[in-house]
Length: 308
Image: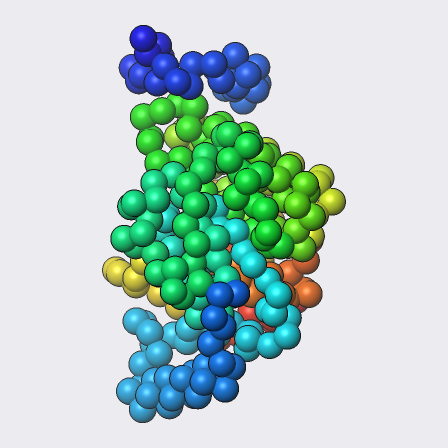
């Protein structure tokens, strides 16, 4: 029988009641398969750029899309596990990895659903089912991969344990599995506001507090990491949200005053940052916050990472 969280009038699934005791003390304190030829890819990029120039519009709002590094030797030999691959950012990450010719293992909860939204196996994508809260499934999925991009997040906003299970314990399990496998790089997507307990998103079961615990576990792991904290996520520019070029800053740069105003950013741009972080030396060991700003100049990702 499920237990009821009386003060919030929500139901905790019976299968998750056993984590309540573990979470309570902390809650109390917070209140390549086939790789595309590089010459073909460069030709496509050149043609796309020429077409864009002729049209006079690079993307909605007249801003330039982020360009990933060329598929050079830095990408060779990578096999990337993408956790949360069927989510908004996860799907964009998988798409861009495929475009780079990088083999992908997509870790999802529902393989049938994922197969309908992710590229086919013929494009180098292997879909595996797993649960980040269950270490055995994560360790198995991690085998044979040498890089990891984590874009997980709780989907049931009525479950008060969701952020603790996914963003804290789930991320810790991914970190442990990555250490066990000896991965070269771990890229973690969290959110602007992780350093601010008063940030409004924490009203959702302390989600940013739990994301911060996942960040800390990664930072203490000894792994080569990059943590990407985006602003509000959008799929396309709409009513000014996500409009402009990407601006990157260090931790706690955006948020409540006196910090800079937290804006929005395209999921595709977040994905581009994640994929570039796999190989850009300037991204190593950094926490970066990203938003789009209408009047910001277009800058290469390598330059953006180096500026932080």
